[in-house]
Every structure is written in structure tokens, then in C-alpha cells.
Image 1 (cartoon, rainbow over the protein chains, first blue to last red):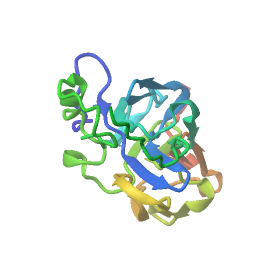
Image 2 (cartoon, rainbow over the protein chains, first blue to last red; image 1 turned 30 degrees about the vertical axis):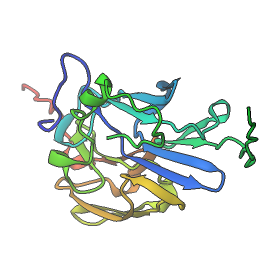
Image 3 (cartoon, rainbow over the protein chains, first blue to last red; image 1 turned 180 degrees about the vertical axis):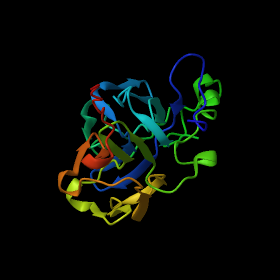
Image 4 (cartoon, each protein chain N blue to C red; image 1 turned 180 degrees about the horizontal axis):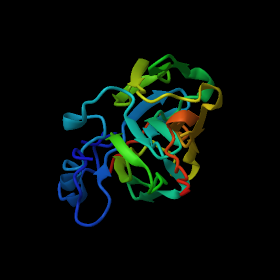
Length: 120
Length: 137
């Protein structure tokens, strides 16, 4: 595990690979979180920041002798700024097969409006 | 480092964003390894090959066991849409693992849990360590 640098005593931290896509129905965010279970994943929305934290604890038995190790226990952390046009109330998250999919729908379009000008 | 949809609220005093630069992406920089990343291990009974393959169905992975190698093949598609950011690898992957010990080919199993593929290759009986009773006449 030479390439995995330890931060303090905790797990190594990584930024998960992320796709951000816009479609008709809003924004879709895909995050690769292999090994993260639902219980070990948290998504927090703080004002304009969406923070995803996931923890990987693989049960790779103690008796095994490792010849090659290219991934292991770690913590995934990623924060994403959210635009004003996202409807915060309707954000959906789904974790399946190690991929987190977030759906961020847009707020219903506000109709263009002419602004009345008054003269004093 | 983070996509900004918003232009109105962009505080420069963001400590976590400064620290974020230190978190290496798993596939980047010094970890530029062949895809997918593999863990190879063995114990007395089995050889284990593990691979990080998030978002791929086990049916879409082609596993071939030849005389001395295990071949992992498949393709990872990318979702459609207008991309703001694309970091997840996509396309065809192919990795060959050398297996130097004799394998009990009929009992090889593969499982996929949370995007991690585990292939268990049982070592064939004749190479397993066993104790021999020495009878003293």
C-alpha cells in the first residue's frame, strides 16, 4: 500500500471520481464510491454546499497474504456547490453498486415578467 | 476544484476547499494504474482477485480462466447528457492476472458487492499444505 498516504491516524482520504451532467429534468451527479455501504454514506446540504462523505471498510481477512494492493480502506469526501436554480427540497440520492446518483431538479421556471416603472 | 454553478455565492474563505486539493483523486497522479485497480491475495485455501468496478453488473464482466491467467474484460458506459465534469473512467477495460498456482477450476466463484468484484479461486488439492503422520515403528 505504498501509494496510499495516511493522514494522521485516520483513513486515507480521496476525492471520488464524479460526473456532473445536465439534462432536461435537472442536474445528475454520479460518484464512484466502490465499497461504500449505505450506512457508511452521508450527504449533507449546507446552504449552497452539498457534502458527500463515504467510508470504506473492506473485510479483507487478516489471514490473507497480499501480493498486490491497489485499493483499500479509505474515506471519500467531496463537496459540490449548488446553484440557485436547484430545487433543494426535491434532491434525490440513490446508491447502487458502488455508484451514488444524485438528482438535482431545477426550480420550476419563473415566468418572465415585465417590471412596472412608476414615475414620482 | 469544485464546479460552480453559482456565481453569486462564492466565498473565498473556504478552508475545506483549500484542503481539498490535498485529497488525491483515486485514479489520478501517482495512482495512474491500469483500470480497474486490483487487489491480489491468497491464503491457505484460495487465491483472491478483487477489483473496483462500481456501476457495472456482474453479467457484463467477462471472466476467462486460462491455464495460467485470469482475464477480466468488460465495458463501462457513460451516462448521456451535457457534461459539466467528467472524471469517471469509461470505455473498454481488460486486465490479465497471472495465476501461478494450480487452481481447482470447477469451484471458481465470483461475487459483486457494492461495486467490488471478488473472484475466489480455490487452490487445487495437491498443492495445499498438509501434515504427514510419521509413524514410529
